[in-house]
Image 1 (cartoon, rainbow, N blue to C red):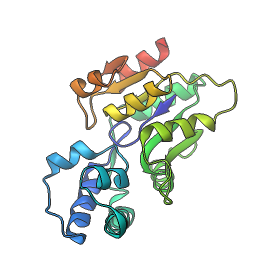
Image 2 (image 1 turned 45 degrees about the vertical axis):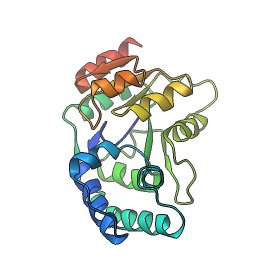
Image 3 (image 1 turned 120 degrees about the vertical axis):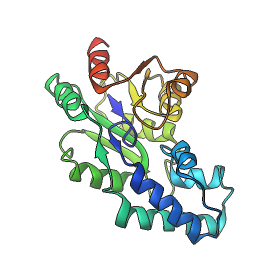
Image 4 (image 1 turned 90 degrees about the horizontal axis):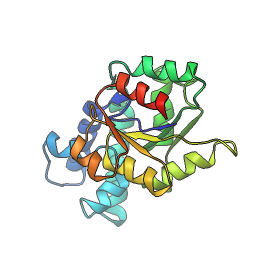
Length: 211
């Protein structure tokens, strides 16, 4: 079972928003409101800066460095677990379901956050982006995560709050389960082809147990 991280297991928006504001100032881009930043959460920062802000070359690298420097030093631990997520994860572990992370953030940062959240022993595989620019897009991150699992392991679904989570999983043959408590909404998740959309971790747990 693969889970997105930001917007699915934890609300990390305060730290991410702060890093965006810092980065935009650092590269002399016009600041944008938090409502616009929310639409970008869930995608790799380098891909966002290139595809949405048109940055490239040295300016792109400067922007990525500014974002990751601010987020890594001040924003990473400004998060909260969504109510009911801990319980759902523990119940799935009790059911001997193998749990994995597939996140657009740096894999190293994801591991640090999981240690801080007392989830370091919860997830068998943690997939994410790399500093060298590899695995920018969610499909590639999901593919890498699946490749780390023992042969014969059946991946049940990709769980996430954004359309990119659902689309990335579907491209690799994984059913997508959308959650509405994060940064996306049911319209976005439905348009991406979610097999199921749930409104609470309890609903998610019941749904996963029925797969």
